[in-house]
Length: 267
Ligand SMILES: [Fe+2]
Image 1 (tube, helix red, strand yellow):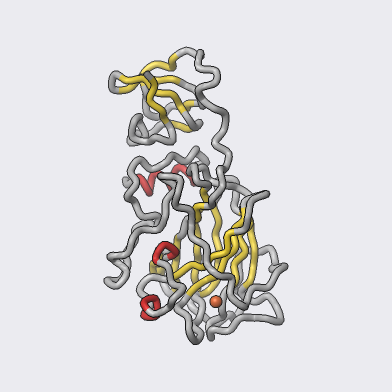
Image 2: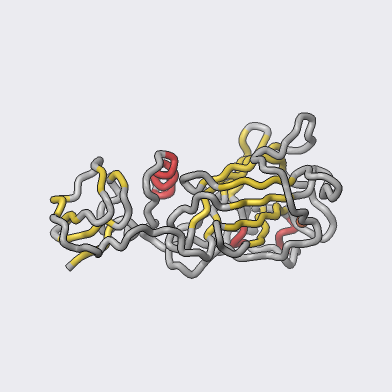
């Protein structure tokens, strides 16, 4: 099982989400990109705290006051069904609940609805920082490659306006706005598509209490898989001492020092 799979499983189970231990993993999980995209750098991850999701221009087709809905598909909607899901993280890798995500896109024919709200909708990330959007693959229109617009805003924080892109699109190489850091991971499923993308917002999030204050609680013994740990718990593993940074239930692969978000080495 990969760390990414572990991450997703952990989030689905409501556990604290650890930082990935290595800094080289692409966010676009199970990326199977076209040959033209394969050499591009991975999408940003929140491992080093300085690579939030890049912003992009709003463009001329945003309309405020979109409906609250996660499903933009109505009966009879033409187009290839597309589900986009992922998580929104702060720069410290804490998933952010309650983040406003406002999506807008062209219809199957490449047209934006400027009179109504077709293919427009906003939603809020759930308690685990996750979101799911049900829509269609947007059509192409002159001058642009295929894309979905989105505004993301954590409570009380600035708005990130950006766009999400599809791998393997012929126009990705000629669209001046295209940014490989904004590629979704897209897979064909049945007659439709599923896509994943994780946002990293330039906000601190809520890392919780400082686990070093107070530092006087007793050790919890040797690190063991399958037991719950609370912030501040101290364990020993491999002859070293560690302090728990996020409440979680331990799993093989999450033992210190593999996951810096969960365990901090102590003298
Ligand atoms: Fe657009």
